[in-house]
Image 1 (cartoon, one colour):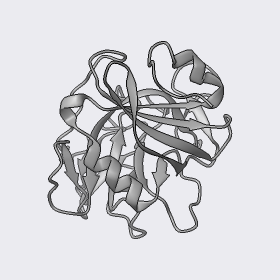
Image 2 (cartoon, rainbow, N blue to C red):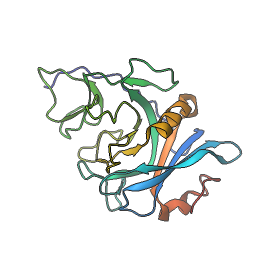
Image 3 (cartoon, one colour):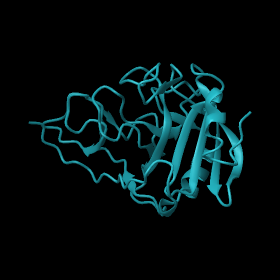
Image 4 (tube, rainbow, N blue to C red):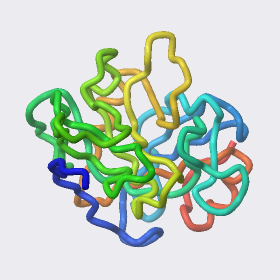
Amino acid sequence: MIKFLTFLVFLTSIAVGDGFDQLVLVMSNEMNATTAKLQRYEKKVQWEQVGENISVTLGRSGLGYSTTSMPQKNEGDGRSPIGLFDIGSIFGYSSQSNSSMPYYHADEKLICVDDAGDRFYNKMALLDSSNPPKSFEVMRRTDGVYAYGAVIDYNRAGVANRGSCIFFHLNSVGKKPTSGCTAMDEKPLLEMLQWLDSSKGPKVLQIPKSECFNYQKEFAGIECP
């Protein structure tokens, strides 16, 4: 049996479509696009924009569905997930955060397990180097793209091979497409992290442009191009 210390997992759930007041809308021009626009919203009488549209980088294969629709999001496919997900926590290299969001300190021992056969698949953990999982992602990366970020709570149930370790994080040098995360420049990422408020149950809605009108009734006020 794999023995390593599971980190505090902050997955306080909010029912989809109910009781939340912050929304991050990520919309690509089409399914296989590797870039998108991100817009933040807060719930007033209807959803109202916060800040400016910013450019973000998606997975190298574009988007994939979290449902049974095709193309599906699967482990290692390079697709960022389509759907509505909690933003459950944030992380960074600093030892502490002044945010209201639950925080993971990404030190040398913090990992995210991407071995689909492991019981801690798609969860953060503290690495036991004497008995590590077969496959994992080190959160304190040498390229610095995880210096700060947020957890997109995709595949919360840890369904094997449906994808793991999906984050908002910093762009890489040259803004190369990600392995399935959503990346952005430092300034807008820090602004978003500061804006996130756990009491408002923040969520991300990530979709291709063709599906935007399907969500306008549920999220009155969001803009579709």
